[in-house]
Length: 428
Ligand SMILES: NC(=O)c1ccc[n+]([C@@H]2O[C@H](COP(=O)([O-])OP(=O)(O)OC[C@H]3O[C@@H](n4cnc5c(N)ncnc54)[C@H](O)[C@@H]3O)[C@@H](O)[C@H]2O)c1
Image (cartoon, rainbow, N blue to C red):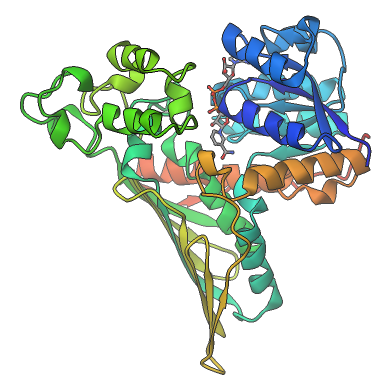
């Protein structure tokens, strides 16, 4: 396989991570150009990948204006800046790796799929959970039939108290008008994963959930607007200094600290805690993201699933139980336990560990798995290597939109069908 050439749009957390995969696998991919308005990030990224100044642009439109420079583009901008570059780069003939969510509304998601199909290029959406060794093992067990027909599913996403505070109270995804709903921002992975494991999208969904805790009403007496000024900071589990200074002092120069500072120094962190969004009291932010939500799903054939997302947990792996007519599977993100009803025997499967399930851990090997699959698909022209292509990704996004409508309106929603992709030959 010849190495695939890449253009990276957005040299933030995700763009940097994917590009580093390319650096570690020069036989598979190389980054030729980058678009990033933040000057320090752009120059650091260009230096790391040996990109000449004329290929380090301040915005994606500038790179798109130069025609097709590379085989593929990695679109790693924030949620509301996905659709436009995806459509533009597809039209130029680039294969597209697009971060999830595809877009914060249904019409834009459908436009992206249309643009991809019209251009005859490949699309891989950043549903990295599909690509972990753990998920591969679960889907193989389900496909083997040893559980029989799966009738019920319980799936838990323990977001974690500090992760909620970081991303969904203080951070980028705190408000649906700035980003997207919590369900789309965080749990689109989970609804997509359930669809992937069960092999079909859900038919109907209902949902409940709200922002209950991270509000002004729960602000402790005497609390200040910023943790660094707060007399009750020491007794608050959501203290920003405790989280970020702890990482800095431990020399852990990685996510989530990497979102807060560009330089890993005490002075930079003190300044960020004093003036930036990540130093704010969690009870004095401008957030509306829900802190707990449940979704009930009904699948074709009558199988049902319940999904719980909660901030109020120790951050950790998702946990799942699949209840089949011949056996039960219990998975904690690392170990899979299969109990067989006929033999009453239990089997333990431990797929190769591949890092923690958060961004710092590469999502349990999912980030690397996605890059591996995407670059192989582009190099060989075999789009079947991509597990999160336009059809399945659109279907799971439609389920998320329907579930969020159900939560907001108190309804049971039918998930609209998506039209299967017309088969278009891959452009290589
Ligand atoms: N797949 C996953 O598991 C996963 C995990 C986290 C985030 N995400 C998604 O990935 C996307 C990026 O998240 P992130 O945490 O890397 O965000 P980020 O804010 O760290 O990075 C986005 C970058 O885009 C840059 N940018 C802004 N305007 C631009 C333009 N016109 N042209 C080029 N670049 C521009 C920003 O300056 C920033 O550096 C988001 O949509 C997010 O929801 C996916």
